[in-house]
Image 1: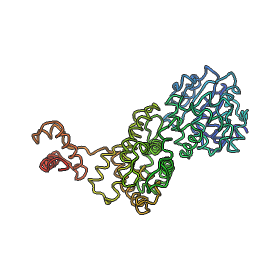
Image 2: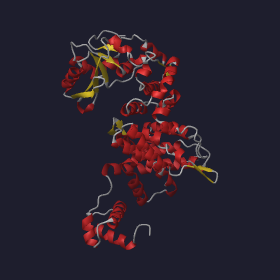
Image 3: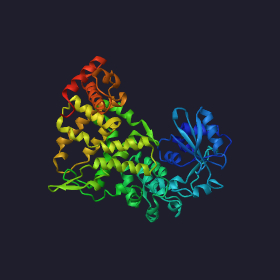
Image 4: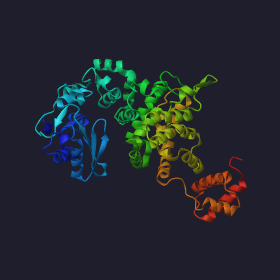
Length: 483
């Protein structure tokens, strides 16, 4: 098969730009782009291998060709990244790991990744010394050598990611090698583990990827908090143990994302744009939602109890949020990603408590949005996946309750999206102005009054300074909230 036999590769702007920019230089397309092209998948971003010492110059040449930028990505692996304008695509240029491309391929992880296509020889076919094309056609994931996992234990996570994303079976010897090395799965740097988990979660079947991590013995090393959910039984509202339920929530989250018209109604298009927003660590809100689904119940084992013969997990949302923060700290996640996922876990129960109050008053909507903050829309989607995954015999799992919850999701999303766009309601009066007008001191009392006034602004609409001061006088006359 020649380059002409990989139309998906040839059509990719990143490949066309690199071919023109590096004319006369030796360079090979390797890794995911070639694998995707050969399996008929679209190609956007590209990995290139070039002779050692040429990676910087090649990346800069590619960037100049389109008016983009180039920067070092990894000094350890000698990788530079060229990024197109508006980040439409990127090319990662890495130095050869050995004197020749053949020797380089011998050091790679799996046969389907140990193929190369010469960019400088348009009519040449793939270099495939280990039968990657055959394995791809047969649906097999096979290690290049018996050293694959010991050379880099991160490949344990990559095995689960690739097998789940491409629907591959892990070849028996490769499976045995992985299990023998599973105890080292957490050795790679946290940020490298996080990058592999991100790619796994972004794939077509992330729940299967997590299952495979368990089958390989790597889940207990990388995410022991998730492995700890195995065998934890639940109340009659659930038909699965906590791990089984968690994996079902991950599956249902993918379903919700893929069927936004069903779950978000008229807000579907805007929800789609929200989920595409970047967060940090190359996570989008969509991928972060899947991570939140994976971690949403990690606090259950620590909070399991019993009341009148009924299994309870009181406080598992708060405990799980703290555990999620620790997990993401261990994985060296950014503060932005960590706060977002922690918020998903902390607030995933709130909407379910409101189902019996439908139709919700505007004040109750405000309280929900104020409590959930910037994750309000995201966690509302998570509650849909969570409710769909509880299919036991209890009352909460009844068809009527599930439909009521999904209706509430569709009702809440427009308000949550508006909160995301516009933020909390702005007051037409400053705190110091309010204190002076009412003759009260600055301090906790004023802070509580401002909080109540923001709720009034959302519920009633306070447009002028005078309206806000009048509302504040009324609130003061009513006494502290809850009296």
